[in-house]
Length: 185
Image 1 (cartoon, rainbow, N blue to C red):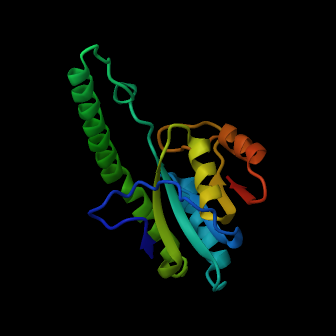
Image 2 (image 1 turned 135 degrees about the horizontal axis):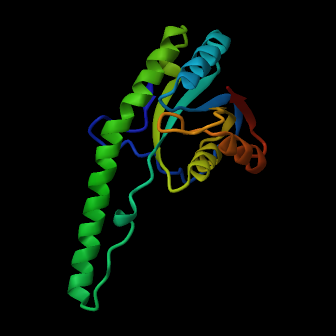
């Protein structure tokens, strides 16, 4: 198993600068903390555990940053403006680190579920992404990572534990091209 950063570093998954070639055996599984995700991990793990060239990235999107951390009120005084900007960046970084710490266990649990199927952990990568928009974040990762297959769950009613509604699946199917989309319930 590999992770996008060491445990002491930020695990935020920024976009890569180059787009490697797309590989159908390079899967991105968008995970949340739902029973549907557990079923997807079991299905994919059992189906592909004996296929040696398959790699999987488990990708969890963090909650959106609160509005109050998006911008400061500003000031006409340049020194005060600079101080406000520095404080805002510090507050944003602190919020990100807290969210990463709270949300990373979702990826760890997903990895454990996948390993239970016999899928080799050395072929698994864990990544966190920051969502201004959930679909855009997933699309950006798919395009940057050269994934040939995106696997998501489809939920008819989104709630706190289920990030992936039917609207997300519909939008991904419209905006994603050249990549297989597995939508599982």
